[in-house]
Image 1 (cartoon, helix red, strand yellow):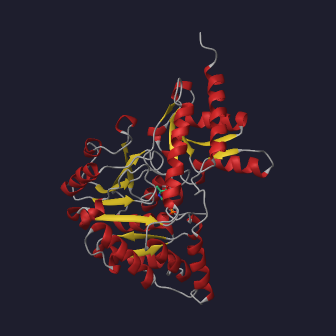
Image 2 (cartoon, rainbow, N blue to C red):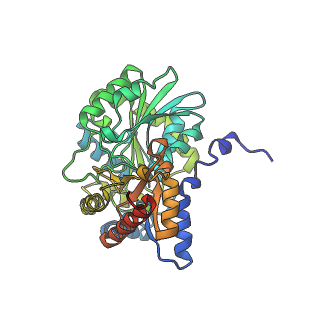
Image 3 (tube, rainbow, N blue to C red):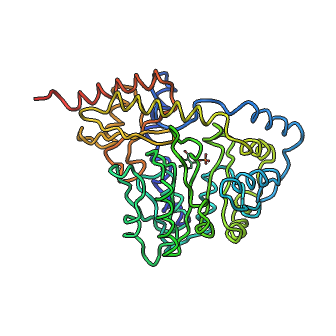
Length: 394
Ligand SMILES: Cc1ncc(COP(=O)(O)O)c(C=O)c1O
């Protein structure tokens, strides 16, 4: 039988990257005790008032068909939030609600690029980016993010990779997997480059509310001279510990959202009113759970640094998010080989850096969302495993 080209383009870009995670889950299901530091699931439930709002809405009959853009109450709440954040009017016509950041990225890229176009994206990157770009037929152009510059995207690295086919500069701040947060100066400099080459800026801001230790957030959407080319995607998955509700959105220029609306409509035929009601409440004020998560994740990142950042392991200090990354290249193992052996020998599951791009080969990504004691025990086992791999010092 014949299949569409998209299936070839996406072959190997989906579940394969999560192989260690899947294997750890299977081992746990078979009864083995596994310390699983693979994915970033919030460590608290969503705030009770949000669950109550979703329940009340369902009981009040808010389960019918919606429309392709979003429920008016949620559009109004998002409009207020982004108008306040940017200091400019962001109208409901500039917003489209979608089931999660992931779908918003998919619909936005499908609206912006196709075969022959190039999308510039930082490497390392969130594991789905390569697939979502490939799904459109566009070519991914990896911009290296380096530990020496805190994994923050540098203008010269982008400039060196711009071609006449470049269409989109894809940013992710705060960044998964490295926890890097772009400064306002960096956002402005990247934005000026995008202006010079007439690029769209697609900004994944799903970790906006998980910044550590008084750090500050900067977005190209908040720069008036970048607004005409900036599209922001986000959701309540991380900020409100609600990934299973699949509630996200996209904000951009009105012309862009009118072009994207038919894409969203043909994909989804509307949103879920009871989830929209819950999300409207969520985005109407600062999250009740984000600050606590950010403080706990920052403390765990420091603990991992204190326990492992010596001799053969180099632990990066994230500025936000749910993960830290560890350079294990001194062991001579790839991230994949390290993660596979660590799971087999120590029952600790972490993600190989290679799942997030070539730039993170020889690294691991460790989730900060498990309890302190579990993370401390995982660190002890990682240290013991590393010592065995390195052999006796001569
Ligand atoms: C950088 C980044 N973007 C998007 C997503 C997907 O988020 P959502 O649950 O809103 O689809 C994730 C989830 O881990 C992520 O880390």
